[in-house]
Structure formats: structure tokens, C-alpha cells
Amino acid sequence: MGATGGVKDAGSEQVVESGHQDVVHDVAVDYYGKRMASCSSDRLIKVFAVGSGDVPTMPLASLSGHEGPVWQVAWAHPKFGSILASCSYDRKVIVWREGAENEWQKDQVFQEHESSVNSICWAPSEFGLCLACGSSDGTISVLTHKPDGSWEKVKIEQAHPVGVTSVSWAPASAPGSLIGPDPGPVQKLASGGCDNTVKVWKFVNNNWKLDCFPPLSKHVDWVRDVAWAPNLGLVRSTIASASQDGTVVIWTQAKDGDQWQPLTLNDFKTPVWRVSWSLTGNILAVSDSCNKVTLWKEEVDGEWAQVTSV
Image 1: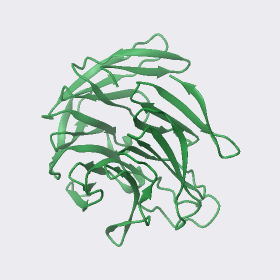
Image 2: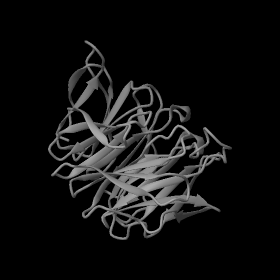
Image 3: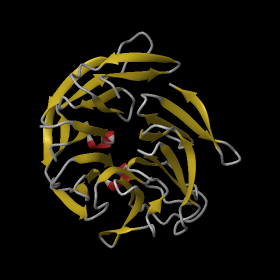
């Protein structure tokens, strides 16, 4: 994404001057859609009030604390307060907390990794304040805030030995809970890496275990992003993966324990950076290295069709 990020408004488009002095790597909107955070190679995180209609998007705060490019930002669920996480090439993950309005403080600085932290993702709020972090050192760390204020730190060693590029949590509602007995929430994670694979992890008996054998292999170059779709209690689980090889693959698991089946959504003929699901999980946004965003929807016959392009 270039130094100016665009914000979509219903039926219109706003272009926002980000104020960043270098490439913007990520933009995240909070739970209520009222605020937006961006991060950049200029080492800064910016927070904006999201405008709509004739109201422009306005800058609120600029957060400095990283010593390298900041790759991703992520908002925690508002039930935990006003909290933002960021990860950087400087090997740090910072959890920021807003005290007085627009006054942000570093709440925690984590230095669990030996090289760049490339991806962060907050768990569904049912699991508490819990952050997964993927690093170029090959590991995934899971940081969980405890009632006494401390943080429990668990590592998935050698998750993708040549580097983890992306992490995404499964929905908290177990597959099939809408139509059958609900076994209760299960912690699962998807990850993508420089080994061209997608892996699924499950938290059992206080340990993270690989939940797919073998790892999901269809890409022929780095997996740049993974996104687990909201399932709203349906039986099927769905993960989208985007790759340097130009393709997006939709992985589906008919029911827990089954093999994951791949379907290539499209070959974009250019590296694909990010994939993101709508809240209901039926529309997938894809952004590629040509600065193009396309929206895709699954048809009744199971094929995917492009619905719009930005």
C-alpha cells in the first residue's frame, strides 16, 4: 500500500492523507468502525477518526516506540478497553493502551523473538486478551493477559522454520455448534510461512499441536497472508491464503478432523499481499502488489466470482 491509504465509505471513497513519511504497510479499523490505525516504514503508528459522508477522516494521535518498519497493527476487542497492538522489524511487539482520550501509552513491550515480527492477531474475545505473533525466526508466540495483570507467554517452536509471515485465529464458536451439541470454544490458529505452506494449530492439554497432516501445500512461493473465515456455527471451516506466487487458495474442511481441500480462487499474475473476510464470512477482499483490491463471493455452485474491484 502506498503512503496514502484510502478509506471506503458506504457508496463512496475517501482518500486519506496518512501523514506517514514512508510506505504504509497496514491499516486496521476498530470494532465499531469509528477509528483507524495505520503503520509504516517511518516507524510510526497513526490513529485517525474515521469520517463518513462529508466528514473527513481526521488524525488523532501518532505513536512512536518502534525502531524499525512497523508491519502490522491490530485493535483488541473493546471489552478490554482501548488497546492496540503493533509488530515490527525491530523484533518487538508493543501493546498500546489509551488512557485519557487520544493519549496512548506503551502498556507492554514484548521482546520474545530473535528477528522481525511480521504478523499479529488478537484471539476471539471469548479467550480473553490473547495475541498471536508470527516471526521470521520461525516461531509463533501466544501472549495471554492473566487476571493478576501478568502475561503468560507460550511459543510454538519451529512453526515454519524458515519464517512465519502470517497468523490468523479460528472463530471461537466450534464448527457445527449451530446445528449440533456445542463442545465449547476451541483455540485454533492458522499460519502461513516462507516454506510455501499453511498450517493449522490446536491448543490441547496446555500445548499447541499441529492439527493438519501434512501441512497444507498448494502454493509454490511464500504464503504472504492467511485469514480464517467467520463460520457463524456452520459445520464447514474455511481459510483463505494469499501467496507471492500470485494465487489465492480457499481451503475448506467439511468437518473437524477431515482433510482440508484446496480450491484456487484466482491467479492474479502478481504477488498477493493480503486477504480479509467480511464479518459474515461470505465475501473475501484480496489486495495485490499492483495496489488493486478485488472482492470475491462464493456462488451456489461452489465457484468464486469477482463482485467488484477498487
